[in-house]
Each structure stands twice: as C-alpha cells, then as structure tokens.
Image 1 (tube, rainbow, N blue to C red):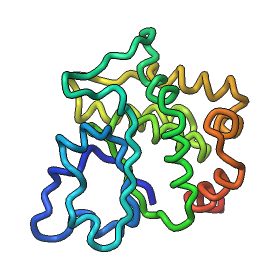
Image 2 (cartoon, helix red, strand yellow):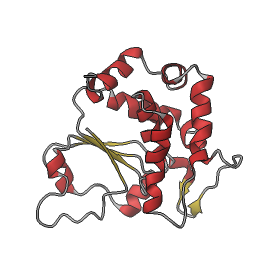
Image 3 (tube, rainbow, N blue to C red):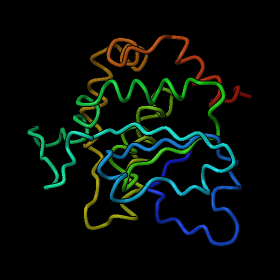
Image 4 (cartoon, one colour):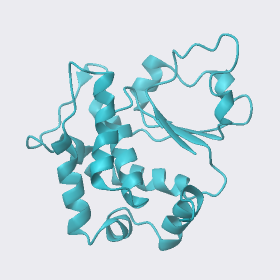
Length: 195
C-alpha cells in the first residue's frame, strides 16, 4: 500500500509502465522546488492514468541556486531538523495519508533516504512497528549509498522527541496538529486485523 523511492524523473518508461503493477493512486514528492526544477517532475506517463501528484517541498529553504544552505545544528540532529524545520509540511504529508482514497501510494525525495527515511520512520512508528525494525528499514539505504552511510543513531533524536510528547499519539497531535481521526484513518487503511 505504501512505497518509498528515490526521484523518478529518470526512471526508464520503455515498454511496460514501471509502476503499473502496483496500481499507484498517489505520488508524493518531498523534493524542494529547486530539485524538481533541475531533476524534473514525474514523467507524464506516471500521471496519465489519474495518479494524484502531491508536491510537499520539504527542505525548500535549504536548496538554493548557489548551493545547499547548511543549517546550523548539533552533530547527530541532522535528521531531526528535517522534521522540526518543516512541521507544517509533515502535517500535510500525514493528512494526505489519512485520505481514504490515496492508496497505493509512493513517496520519494531525491535520494529516497533522508526526507523519505524520516517520513517512513514516523509512519512505521505510528503503525506500531518496533524501533529495531524501523532502524533496520532506515539503514537499507546504505546498500545504495555505501560511501555516505546512515547510522542508527540518526533516528535517536526523533524517537526522543516522540517520547517527550507522550509517544506517537501525543507527538502527532501536539507537534504535527493531527486529529485522532487522521491517525485512525491511516491505521485502518494500512493495518490488517491480527489473526
């Protein structure tokens, strides 16, 4: 129901439609406006069959024509600021996930590991996945980017912020401003009843 990816602008569309088998209904791009301008929008073939495209430009203030603006943060908090600097964007992201008609859904940034990794970690936490499994999922990106590996401690400040707000329910309500009905809708669509 939910897929994550790197940017799709260069995905080969020769022959069979590469996303056809998942019957995609929604595509969420987390790239900045500058990245979309330089790397490209989703190819028209992805959207021809009525796929909804949502652009949530997380990191927009960091990407500039003259280069990447390095935000001042203490070491280890690089992924936390992806969350804290763009709270309204993350609110939009989860409100889209709460829409009952968006699945199957794919979300992506440029590399599919930092902004997308934070989004995946928050979603998995909301769905009750153990933190060990969340970290394992986060670190899968190291197979693609072995020269700039992610570390498991990069999610620690995010987990700390969640815990400081009474867990994921409190975090989603107090920090992101989501309603309990939003969380219930996401869980209803993405969780299966226990057997």
